[in-house]
Image 1 (cartoon, rainbow, N blue to C red):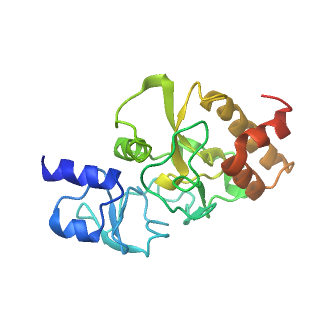
Image 2 (cartoon, rainbow, N blue to C red; image 1 turned 30 degrees about the horizontal axis):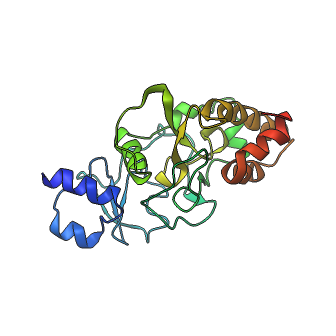
Length: 225
């Protein structure tokens, strides 16, 4: 097994720490920063990286910071705020909803209602989940890292429309036929954004509601699934 492959396996098992880094010189594929608690971050922007892991110990790739996820002069993402603590990074339970211990959901502090409801805001400007991070999510949930086509989506728990973060704590594998599945949740995400912008629901309430029980929020918004 190559050092690169070993690093990826250790990361997937939640065992890749600073101690392991001392024995394996190559960071896991796609990692952009080493955190002070020994874990690796896949964040593609400077703000908020390792915010729940003691801060950044070292930027990887020879750069002072990873490339920004948004163009210069656009909105500052701020830091990632988790809905609840992330206490697991492996052996996550795969089901219709995220394993809250692994995937509590999180949002960017800089993406306020004013920003999200601006006519110039587009989710494509902040969407940044590299393939390596998607594979890491799948591995945490006991899946073989790979491409599953339309049968599965690495979903943002708090959607980008509501300021959701690209950090791994806000991602989980959601199946098309999970009952109700990711296409039903997509409908809620778009509607929730409209309701926030119209003032019918507070942004934070929408973020917490969709992260903790999106099916209940769906019924509240649409009346039925």
